[in-house]
Each structure stands twice: as C-alpha cells, then as structure tokens.
Image (cartoon, rainbow, N blue to C red; front, side, top):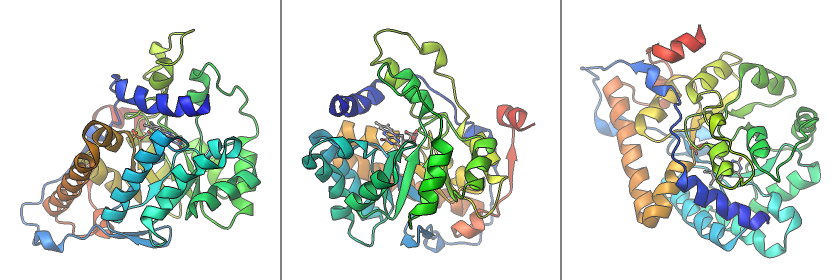
Length: 338
Ligand SMILES: Cc1cc2nc3c(=O)[nH]c(=O)nc-3n(C[C@H](O)[C@H](O)[C@H](O)COP(=O)(O)O)c2cc1C
C-alpha cells in the first residue's frame, strides 16, 4: 500500500493542473544600470548545515522506498553532487515497516553525494526518537527534516486523523538528537504563530513550504474516490507571505523558502526576503521525469546562470550583499501583510 502510494504521489503530481500563487510576483526588485561588477564576480556559494555549497538551493524531499523511487533518487543525487547543492530524501517512514531492500533507495543518495555532500533525512511529526535515529543512520544525514502534513493526511482516505502531541514530540526530538532538526510543511505554509511555537521548543530551522507550487490536496484528490476536494485547492499560506512572517521572528532562525520555487526570480526574491536557502521539489521532478537526467541538468544550469544574471542586474555580488537589497511589496501580498 505504502509503496503504491509513493508511486502515485509522483504520477499524480505530474497530473495536477491547479495553479496556486506564491505571491512572489508581488515583490519588486530595482534594476541597477551601473552595477560595477563583472559576471565572473558573482558568487552564490554559501554555508549550509556546516558545509560549503555552490548555490543556495536544496533539492527538497520527495521520494524513496521503491525501485521507481530509487531511480529518481539516484538521478537527483547525481545532480546535487554535480552542482554541489544539498538534497533531502523523501519520507523514510517506509523503511520502518518494510523489508531492508527499500533502504537502498535512500542510501543511494549518500553514496552518490559522498561524505562532503549535504544529505537530509525525512520523517513525519509522529516519529519516535528511535525512528529518527534510524532515518538519520540510513543516509548518514547532516540534518533531520520533520514534515508537517495535516492537510495532506486529511485529504487521504486512509490518512491520519490524530494530530495531538506533535509539537511535544518535535521538542523531544530536538532535545535528544545531536543533528539540526528542520521542521517543514509540504506546500501549505508555516504561519508566524506556528514558527513561534516551534522556536520556543528549540527549532532553529524552518522550511516554510508554502502555497503556490505542489498541491497535496489535489494530488490526494486524484487518489480519493469517495469525496471531491476541489474547493480546497486554494488552501494554504502563499510562500512569500509565510517567509516574510517567519523572518519577522528572529535572525537566528534559519529559513528555507520552498513551495512553488521554479525560476531564478523566485529564488532571488526569496533570498532578498530573508531566506537562507530555497527548496525545489516539483519543478525539478517534472524536468527529470519528462526529459531525463540531461533535461533536469539543463534546467539547473540555466536556473543558476539566470540567478547570477539577476544578481548582477541588482549590483549584488554575493548572497550576503543580496540580503541587504531594497525591495517593494505590492498588490495582494501588501494587503495580506497589512
Ligand atoms: C512527488 C512529491 C513527493 C513528496 N514527498 C514528500 C515527503 O515524502 N516528505 C516531505 O517532507 N515532503 C514531500 N514533498 C513535499 C516537498 O518536499 C515540498 O515541500 C513541496 O512539494 C513544495 O515544494 P514545490 O512546490 O517545489 O514542489 C513531496 C513533493 C512531491 C512533489
């Protein structure tokens, strides 16, 4: 059942048609006609989870646990290695209840990326300490992602209906493992209030994973034969809003902006709004499944080239300078912030 669901998530993601809005379009950046920089001066490298990476992009959690998923993870991790960017594996819950063979589909990520690569383990909010240790062990993880997916579970016929105790459980995990814990949504966003509660229990890494990209209510609706959930497709906090509100909280909170990050402007705007790094899932998966490794590679190549173009057009030569850039917020994002 779990294995079939994993495959259906990828297949149904590719069938989704609803277009959400991250509201990053409501962020205006100013053109600098005299940037006094050469293209070769632009440096997008940064430090993430204690390791040096070439671009502030993580290939975010998607899959694992089946042969089909192993192929995807193998390709994604080779891309992550080639571009020297981090990668998170999909939920490892499957290794806790399935045969040992399914572990290989996760282990391949560390094998391909080597010890110098940044690999992130992934489990849900009910994971026990023992589960977390096991998930970290399988990929020799640099950090543990804990995903919050209440909307997805509710949209699944067979999904969880019990959500009490998750915050306490996260606190227990944060206090008892020696690796950073990244708490993430799966496409519905993290509000300031939730970020505050996570911060209070010791979480210092939040992946906002907001509305505007992958839509798990739609993905699950395509598998749900008993109820039509179409009216819930617009649910969620747009990525730009979630990011701005979480950033208000504290400067020592590391923020990953994800949810609908597709192009260079999405990445640069997220960094200007205060993200430390951005996460991309659905977009890279589409390029990979539709056109293979080389297609996904070309996507990352042109994405990173265009990110440098935008930085030069702003007159900012590195990530540190980018964070000081002026911006204006207009339209619906402005209204929601007011
Ligand atoms: C096919 C697919 C499977 C996913 N599986 C997981 C998962 O196992 N664990 C998780 O934390 N997030 C999972 N996600 C959510 C992503 O990590 C990310 O939070 C979300 O897709 C929003 O980013 P995007 O718009 O770039 O896709 C999955 C996304 C996709 C597209």
